[in-house]
Amino acid sequence: MSKSKLIGVIVACIAVAVVVIVVVVPSSPGSWGSHGSPEAVVTAFLVAYFDTGDATQMLAYLDPEYPERLGEHLGDLRRMLQAKLDGFHREMEREGVSASFEVGSTQVLNGRGITEVTIRYGDHEWDTIVDTVRRDGKWYVFELLDM
Image (cartoon, rainbow, N blue to C red; front, side):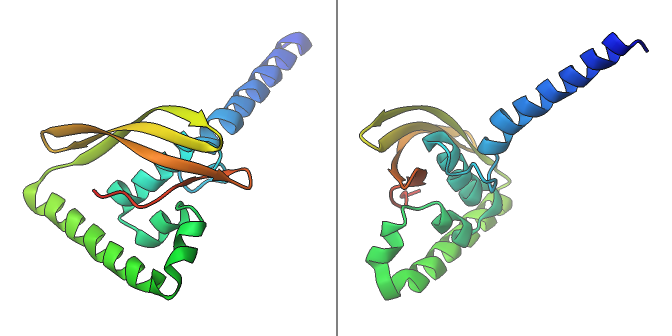
């Protein structure tokens, strides 16, 4: 392989790596970029709900002021939320249905974001919005959703 072709291959590999780091990693649930945008935090929050069923993970994506408002009741909320998630996942398994979501566009104004989401459960589909807030440069889901 000639030196110019080798340089071209190296440059192409670097370009692909940059795209993966800039585009894919920040939006991956659980990555350092999960709080990088309203869409990323909504995605991570909904993955915790629909895919992993993990209340602790869901609460990690909530506005830090939300648990502070709950004070000593945060542990109770975590247990109740986990019980709801466990029941939801058992029901999905028992009924043989799947659930999925699609995160749409976001409108941002003054550190608050409204993100459109389409949720699918079995044959049902509905649109909703998720309210997000930016604190100290990171995005959070403003409050728990009633799902």
